[in-house]
Structures are given as structure tokens and as C-alpha cells.
Amino acid sequence: MPVDMSTSRPAASAPTAAQSRRTHDDAPDTASRFARLVTLEEGPERDAVRDELVTAWLPMAHRIAGRFRDRGEAIEDLRQVAALGLVKAVDRFEPERGAFESYAVPTITGEIKRHFRDRMWALRVPRRVQELRNKVRVARRELTQNPGANEPSVTDIATHSGLTEEEVNAGLEALESFSTLSLDAETAAGDDGYTLADTLGDSDSSFDVVVDRESAKEGLRRLPERERAILYMRFFEDMTQSRIADQLGISQMHVSRLISRSCERVRQEALR
Image (cartoon, rainbow, N blue to C red; front, side, top):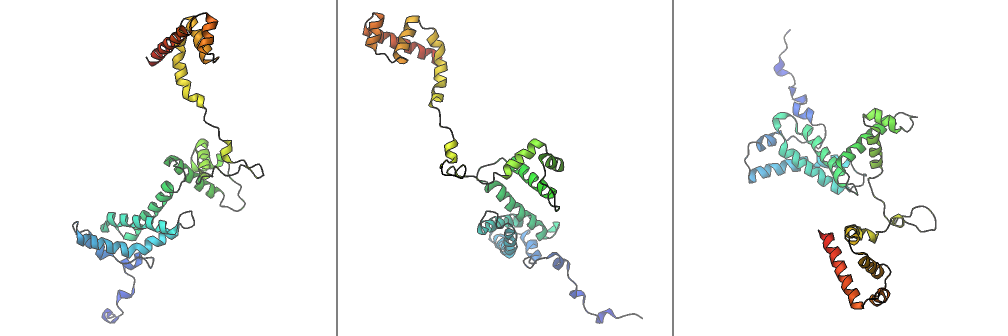
């Protein structure tokens, strides 16, 4: 017997497509506003609609930021980064491609992850090393997730991740290098008071004259034997001009002229 469907309960009780997409309380229905946004030209009206969309979805951005708390960054800063990712998502979203939430969540999450990757290292680390660190961290976690599993070796991690052992070692070093240690930190427990700074070598002042010394060598070799002897006595044995003159049987004035002439000759040859 036919049933008159006009008296049955309306189908509105079933969730609509838009409602089924909204999996969280902080996922508002903004489809109409996005449809309007794409039709507007640059100007105050478009900016106002854009601001409304950002405000409507901001709670979701804050929720995503909360997933990354307790990782060394203040939650207020994480929320700012998430808000930046949300703005990018609003600006780049194309309504005909699907639900905004499906596009915004990975966009905001990626922005936060980039923040940790690029800004949270105490020292600037090349992106390649950061990526190796992440691959090694994931591989080690997957290899140790079973109860009773031993700490994987470098070879185990390399086989599991598809990296070379050299790359695994670089990633393992980066795992321990997320933060720096103060030079005032003591090297070991005890009363000796030695710090990391005490293990560092001092600058060798001799390095400053290496180039000049090497440049002058050839010019010194070309000097007559007496001029070389005078320069040696004056600058290596620290003898006075008077004493050099007495030892060579010449006048002090002559010694002075020979020193000046020899030094100028060596300097000119070194500058060539």
C-alpha cells in the first residue's frame, strides 16, 4: 500500500553535508562567507569579510596550537603562529576544492612545525640536518614502540628509514643539539670548578703574522749576507745599533742606514 510521504518527518533531521564536515565545535559554517569573499575585489568590504572568517575560525587555530604545548615554546607564541597559518589558509582557500577545515588544519599545523624547525633551535642548523633529525626520530620511535624492544642500532635505523649510516649519525647528533649548553657549565661533578670555557683554546697571536712572515722570507734570502746578519742581530738577538756597529767595525749611522734600506727592500718585494 503506498505511503503518503508528505506526512512523514522531514529529512532535515538527518545531518547535512556541511554538518557532517564540521567535526569540532570550533568549526563554524562559513561556506556562504567564503563564497562571497571570492567575488569581492580588494577593498574595505573584502577585508571586513576576511576578518570575519579569521575571527570565526580562530578558536580552531588555538586548539591546534594547544597540541604543541610543553615543547619549549610559550602557548601565546604558538597561538600567534597558528593565527598566521589561519590567515594564510583563508587567503589561499578555494571553496570549490572542498571543506575549509580540511584545508586549514594541515596549513596551520605546517606553519607551527616550520616555526619549531626554523626558530626553536638555539643555533642555526641546516634544513637538511633538521630533516635527517626528524627521520631518525620517527624511525627510532617506530622501532622501539613494541614492548621489550631494544634500543635500535645505527644500522637498524638506517635500514628502517632508508638513510645511510652517515646520515643516521648526523641525525642522532642533531637530536642532542636542539638546545645549547652554557660555557659556564662545569665539565664534571667535583670541586675543581672547571667549565666548558676552560677547555677552549686561546687565539694564537702568531697566526696574525704568518702571511707577513712567509711573504718576507724570499726577500730576506736575497739580501747580502752582511745585511741579513745585521737584521738578525737587531730583531732576533735584540742588539742595539751601537753594539752592532762595534761588532762589525762600522759606524752606528751606517748600521741605521743598512737596516732601513734592507727593511724597505724586503717590504717592497713582499708587496709585489
